[in-house]
Image (cartoon, rainbow, N blue to C red):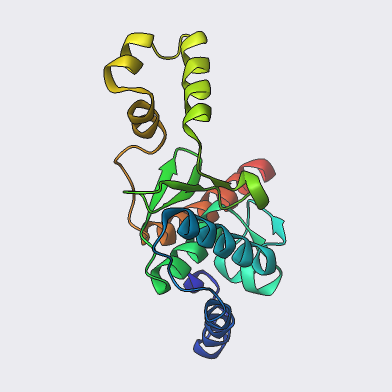
Length: 193
């Protein structure tokens, strides 16, 4: 991820890595109970977000996280992917046509991490009552049918719809960063011509 910055050198990268690794040492160990582990993930989420992410900026790159705190969904997701790898927290990187985010514990707790939003809106573990409300709203808007939902059940339908089984490899974040750079530079040229 640092290779996009032609001025990045090994010493600078090690300095940034030490900064993250020092913070990792302060995190509590994995919890055996589901609720406690979910709270630990929330704690880690907040503790990473606070010191590294100062301002969302579409045109930012991984090194910007460490230099001035600007970030976007790709760079924020890349930092969380590194942290989760180091802490042995399972996750999936999810991609939509215009966004990237993470799901921590995708096979069990299904914790949605909106990496660009701090606080309670960035960390989501919906309760069954919330899932029912969301799906009923989709039914009322005729975006899905009641029969589709009842065939799978509310929770399974929600999981399939919002989490799905498709995810991308974390290494794809590197390509996305370059793609974003190219699109932004190409877009600026179009405006100038």
